[in-house]
Image (cartoon, rainbow, N blue to C red; front, side, top):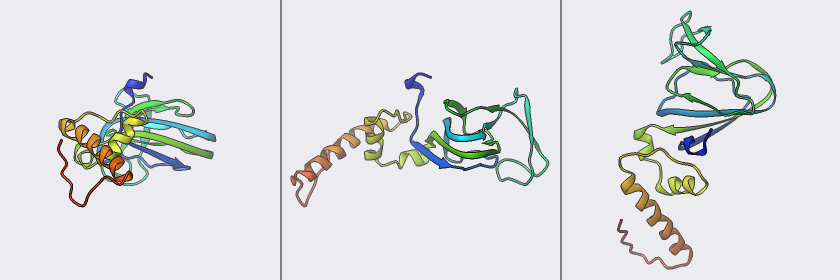
Length: 167
């Protein structure tokens, strides 16, 4: 997968988490998952109208369905490979044994994303992540640079008690 396709604001790291079927809240949609460790099973089930797997819910799950409902989807092997999926579709972890670590990269939805501190956005960019673009990035990007400069000035003792920040 080309590096330019990896966009997100958040990385979730888990150990031995077997998620129930769910839809992500506050997710822009594109998510990327990989898993590693010494485990068997642990694939990711992803809702897909053209999929060849059916899962029956064993309990009522908010935003997913009622006990007994069926979900059509596909099962993706995520061990030592990166899989892209839509986090707004129903998905969950298949049963596994052993020790399973997982890393998920995803983008927070617009409301939460707008609240992401500019310094956090700048840090993500500096370490190679591409946060999703948004309409107000014209404001946040210069603000992130201004805040980085402010942090550097503060570290050098160059910030007075009053401050005017222009972007």
